[in-house]
Length: 143
Image 1 (cartoon, rainbow, N blue to C red):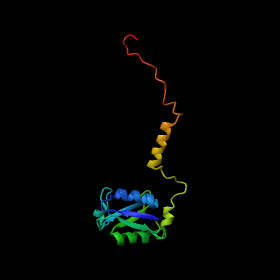
Image 2: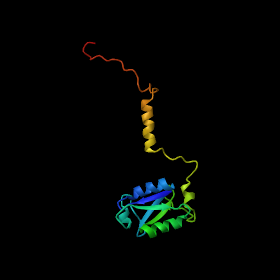
Image 3: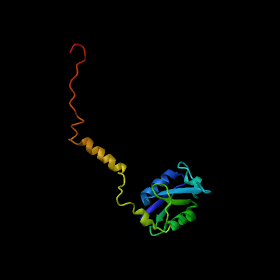
């Protein structure tokens, strides 16, 4: 089950990251028909409440139904968009169709995996090209 977590102090940038991970799409938030800037918080965009809110995502909802549920439940005017920020042309798509992503597109490696990979190559005995022998240099005082 996918859970959307909203907090009044969350910025639009963090919200976009969360939508990217959960639904493989982007989101645009509006306040009085104007785009909300990436550094603004959800409180500034109209989110009611002071605590962390969780919304269980029903992936059988259409885009229109999901956007309406967020607007009614949290007073946020959102629009789901593709990776380039263009609104989906069909609001009757179901969330699971959007969340499926592009089968040919690979997700970028996570930071955890990148850290593991860096540790692996640093401990690897095959890093000889980085361990070039250093010839001893004299002090330059007659050596």
